[in-house]
Amino acid sequence: MEVTTPQAQAKEGPDPAFTALLLDFLANLELERGLSRNTLEAYRADLMQFGAYLARRGDDALQIGPQDLAEFLAELASPDDDRPAVGPATIRRKAAALRSFYRHLRREELLGADPTANLAAPKRARTLPAVLEYPQVEKLLSAPTGAAPTAVRDRAILEVMYGCGLRASEVIGLRWSDVDLEEGVLRARGKGSKQRLVPLGRKAGAAITAYLRSARTQLARGGGPEKLFLNYRGEPLSRQGLYKIVRTNAKRAGIETRIGPHTLRHSFATHLLSGGCDLRALQEMLGHADISTTQVYTHLSGEHLKQAYFSAHPRAGG
Image (cartoon, rainbow, N blue to C red; front, side, top):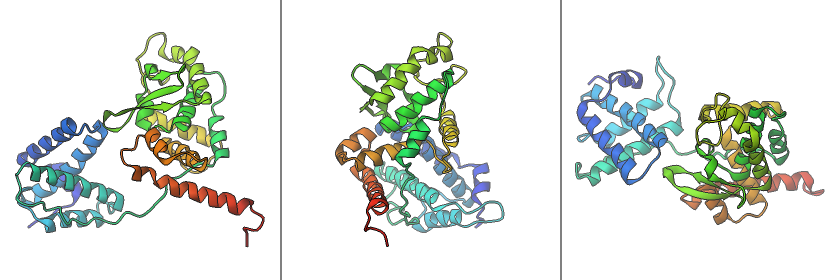
């Protein structure tokens, strides 16, 4: 039976029967589990590729077995003349999408057995997220200079990201009405449209106050949307625009490591734990559903403590 590369599969697309199953699955994720648009799009893209693979092979999604799924993942992991091999992290994501899809089909009683029950994917390599040292954070937060509206906005954005530990999507999703300067809190909208209140520190609050006083009005040209952070055209700031702000100011600050908005979130969490913050309190501030996700920062803070010890203690060195 002919098997083609994932690139060729994506061009032809899945058959209508598979597409109907996929649409039902995505509707279930959206309505029952309340997943975000970005998450739904990731599921859709991964499973469309799988559906195209099945169509090229002439296979039925309801008839295949574990070996067929393993062959799909193995083909992704093997490079060919047209494309490089897909990395382990991407394959793990695709395997997770397949598991969710087939569990849904099993719950709908469309399958007698789940073919993903023993599906193996590459093991996750334990990598700790990048974290800035506090002096680097200070330089980054001081990088936007001047009174231009975009500079005042950038200072507010960087202070909020480090001061509140928000995700990129939460930063660009903030509305001006989400900020309560008097109470010192802001409302963040996390994954699955879940909302939480996050403490707003003094410096972050001052930076937002300065931004709202004049810079936002200038950017909005007297009108504008309800989103808090706007671009130079007066439109809501995009995810790409946020990344550009972080990286541009990191370059100004002399930070050579490639960083993004999530680096500030990781730094926020690590520095709080190093300062003695309770893990459960940190979980609430970060908006993690499972505390095991928060626990990675205990390893990071431990590494920071060891570095501080070996650099400062007179008898710690060799």
